[in-house]
Image (cartoon, rainbow, N blue to C red; front, side, top):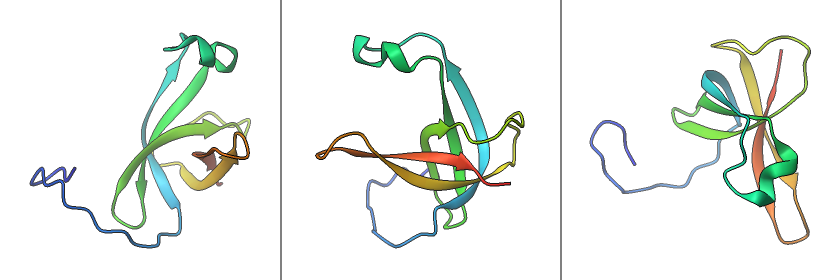
Length: 92
């Protein structure tokens, strides 16, 4: 949904997947028992260079603490042969 006009119109386009951290939250409690083994996990809201904002889990890749404006890159995690999910990795 467009944050400005609330339109549900969408357009697909190719993006680099590079962006910066807008905000994040750390979840210590699984919202479903299927996620119990993955807690705690961090969800990041990222401002992509393409001009859109996206939310996805953060894949730990650095000993540095997360910070606003930190550069990240989108990658994909093959959960199974049928399921691939997006996640971000810090890119410093």
